[in-house]
Length: 255
Image (cartoon, rainbow, N blue to C red; front, top):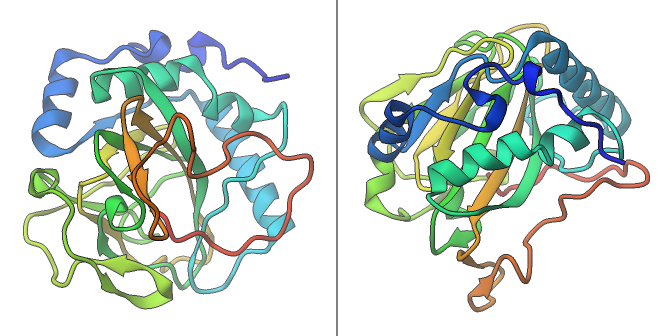
């Protein structure tokens, strides 16, 4: 059974998955849009508590970003990932019915976790509109490695990728015009799979805790591991249901 997030815990105007025309225009123009206060304090704290419990179970490495899509049934993450409100927001920004691509924790260890500028599409390639809804579960800024994003970079398509540290991929230069995204707990940023982004090192003594839920439009196909193009609605790339128990997976590499 999936717990229900009360509409009152999605701050107005997000309770019905609504966005303003200005927010939609901003997303289309810049490749990203910030949604301040998407989630109320109570649910933000519940999500943070569950994410940290998952980190305790699977192990938090000392120097990198820790990503896992696993969560247990019936809890806050289950409710958030499958919430009608979140899907409605994604559908609005994607200009068509949205489907889950995959959720994951975005926990950055103290003393590590810098992530080179990259596009999510440099990992698994999508041939149509897809996005990431990245929610801060505590204050994030330059000190603990907040997101840095390049407005308008989504217009250039999928860029050539080069290997970077921590088995990731990235662009081959440092971009100009970077926007530093300082966020408060419950704030959410939506950004296109083609938008160039990165993050700095966590220089604090505590983990930086966030959570990401990725969506694609229902007509999108993808290719990975040398396979041909496959409709994601028929062959999902990742599992996005709950698991009976947590395993100890390694960090994923798909942004």
